[in-house]
Picture 1 (cartoon, rainbow, N blue to C red):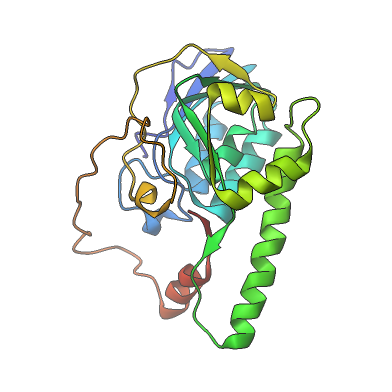
Picture 2 (cartoon, rainbow, N blue to C red; picture 1 turned 120 degrees about the vertical axis):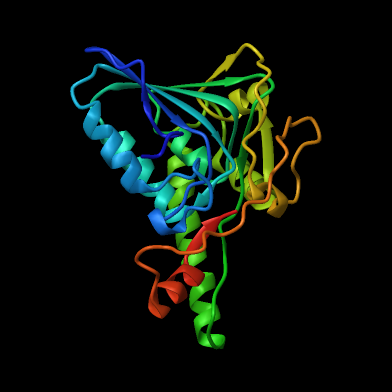
Length: 239
């Protein structure tokens, strides 16, 4: 059980769910206890079936685009009224997950980060050209999610430019672009994640936890096949 994606304060009417780590594709892709895969979310949502209110707390540096989109769609379909709280940051694909809320709350000192999808690939020149086309298609899908949550009067060209530039928005800045509420500032640190090392413009004001080095497990059940490893390298990640 992912202790960081756990149902808290479950009542007949409401439940709290926390996303406090990286977004990964599957169980064997986890390096930290806080990492979250779509199957985790599916199982947790089964536990809260029938609740009227779902509080979603996010403090994540992002991760797998396909996993994040799956999580977004699962949350979006859930019948409860969903309130999202960005505790530290919702970066990259975690910003898409945040958009699943019927109400989105970002403190003035927390951050949303949006940028272009990024990928690794193995192959020849034809493979690389196809990957570039695939990335453009994926970006269009992500932009559609952002467009559904635009603040009044904001043009999508503005968002496209921000995505292209890797843009970090604090709560007040995010409220100028997206339909969300600015919450009171808090003191929670951003998620400790190696993802942050791969971004170009992490704000110096972002309170980042120190990242401890964790050795890979000596043995992993259901060790991935060569094909699974190649698929992982081809996987599109918002990092």
